[in-house]
Image (cartoon, rainbow, N blue to C red; front, side):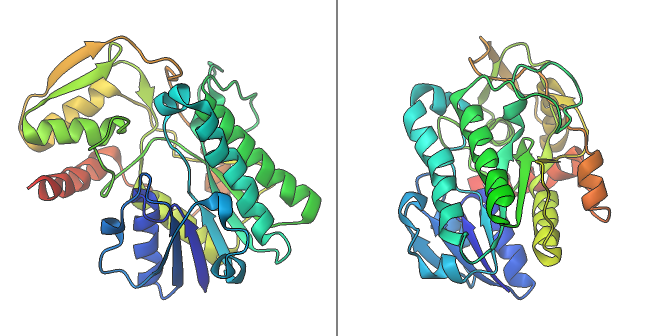
Length: 307
């Protein structure tokens, strides 16, 4: 099995590459290293190609792949608000380039969309059939990306599976940049005894999904060539507030976290929780890792990474 992973030097892509290599797949990683790092791939037997997905239509390793996992993106709501054009080009136009590159061969494409597409729709849990109300350029770009993929499936018969990721976390997720996700930012602050910034009162909720669960689901989708005519939530219907996360991190680190509450950020969704019915029907054998267990593994990695 030959698998190409765009954005494969990012934390989800690198965890997936490790899993696939261990399973005997031949893996090619594409990444422009704007947010990923070759350090995430250290020791892995993969072919690495540095470059933008905006210029890979003629890439032979992409054309030759049996499956493409498209993770490459600019993955930040705040960054998309600051620079919407580059977010659109990477996330929407970049996806179109990937789809066009593999259309003629009929390659199986699995791509990452986002729970952010639900946006201002207040209904919980989030069901794939509900109306998207994106409230950030990032969310719009992800809705465009999944829509392009499903349109290619409808028009050209391209086998596609568009996952809506919900707050994925785990080892290799870097805390060291301005747009770091909440769990690595909190865990990093806790392990170093530093203050952590909470946007809002901390009671906003998320359906956190451990990266190992995401990787296992994607690998199963590749092996069984799973497709869907509609997007699929990749989360399991849990709901935890940011303050819940703080409490769990404190328990695992044995330290009380120091919190600075600031104003909520524009474009952030207040509450998010997946309806997992469709996911479970497609992947009945996947057993999710709990937030508590996933945090324990993540914090252990963070402590080693910080030392």
